[in-house]
Length: 104
Image (cartoon, rainbow, N blue to C red):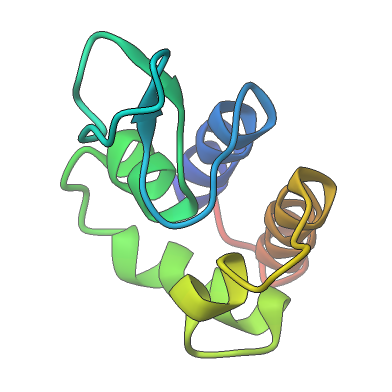
């Protein structure tokens, strides 16, 4: 899987239902990214689900760190008042950067 396709897939997952910190099922209970009843996904789980243990995961992480302007993506994501639009925008900036760098 390419860096850009991983970012696009993760962005789509986040846009479809995001929650900060830990993914949740429809009842609001914490669940892992591979759970069938997943209703809202956190940034890290979206990355893990999109990457599926791909070697390009480190590059995706590097791009997201750059786009968010912090090395601590978890605390950035969980900042009070963080909105899904901000998280999706970080994926968009990372995608634009990947394109500029010529990454597939």
